Image 1 (cartoon, rainbow, N blue to C red):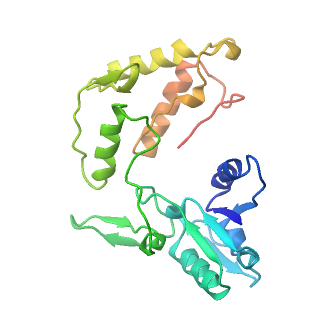
Image 2: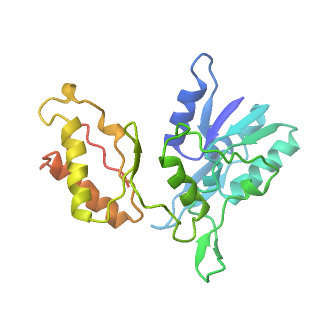
Length: 239
């Protein structure tokens, strides 16, 4: 058995999940297929294979985050699985961002988007229940609405709904939202002694739609934490 994922970061997470009591090897899909990136012009990525594939060494391939697997790699994986009479289990979320190498396809509203991985065209079972939130948490209502309307403005009940400290709080005033964010960060984060932090900064997430907005909030959080140096030890900036 081998655990497979599209990126090294995803492989590390999969490795932690699979290797609690036993050892299961993990690797990227590129390594499984022995596909190597060639030197190419800036902005392009070319790949080649030397013909020796690790996929033939395992009886069962557990492929996680298959939404990020390109159609080419899905096709190659399935061909070798069938050829060698092996088995593969693909796990992924259709609502997640597809592989950058996926082709653009038109949508009914005349916009274009990158098509889902062909992994979702295979025989499958779909989990429709969101399991990362506890039953009864008000955030579930918003989560279902957003997943349902990925290509248009989701129909949300924009009323604050918080139960036992968990839920959704809506703001129609950006200044008030920033003040609340600053309060959450400073209330739980000791600016002088991290050992006194009430919660880890890893438990706070700001999710944005555009890279420009991500940069805006990165700068905002840095200003709240009073970071002035270009780089600070332990700081995490995400996009």
